[in-house]
Every structure is written in structure tokens, then in C-alpha cells.
Image 1 (cartoon, rainbow, N blue to C red):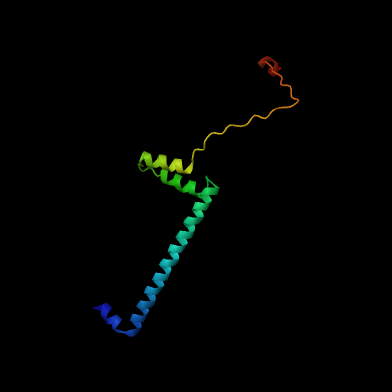
Image 2 (cartoon, rainbow, N blue to C red):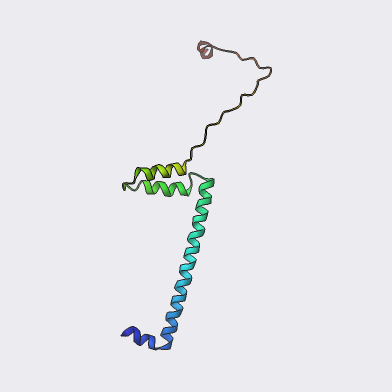
Length: 108
């Protein structure tokens, strides 16, 4: 009954509409800020593997809660991707005489 009495007054209805509009604006700004923050975090993870993204994940893993092993493996694989091994080319050494020394000779 109280709400109806307040809304019967034109000023209260206008105040309520202003409140709803302000709340929608705030919600929109929060969503935009979260999206921008997430985008910055993704960019940072690409450039600095052990930056904020790493800290967030490790805090989640250390909370003491039981976590599915497969989830942990997937997180580690995503954070630390394996790169294929590469072979170094051996460069020809010109005018270089290799000297083979025994262990006794090196210790002298």
C-alpha cells in the first residue's frame, strides 16, 4: 500500500524512472569495463606468461579445494604450450682446430 501511495505522487514516479535509468547506465558501464579488462588480460597473457593471468590461475589452484585433474592439465597445457623441438644447424668452422683434452688436462 505504501508503494502505491508514493507512486500516486508524480514526483515519486519520476524519481523511480530516474533511478531505473541510472541503474541501467551503471550496469552498462560495468559490463563495458569488465569486457575491456578481460581484453587487456588476454593481451597481457600473450606477452607475459607469468603476469597477472598466471597469478590469477595459481591463486585459484592453491585454494585447497579439490579440482578435477583434467581441468588442471588443461589449464597448464593452455598456459604453457609445448613447442616442437628444433634442430640447430651446425655451422662449419673455418680455420678452427679443435683440441681434444682429457679430463686430467682440463683440471690442471
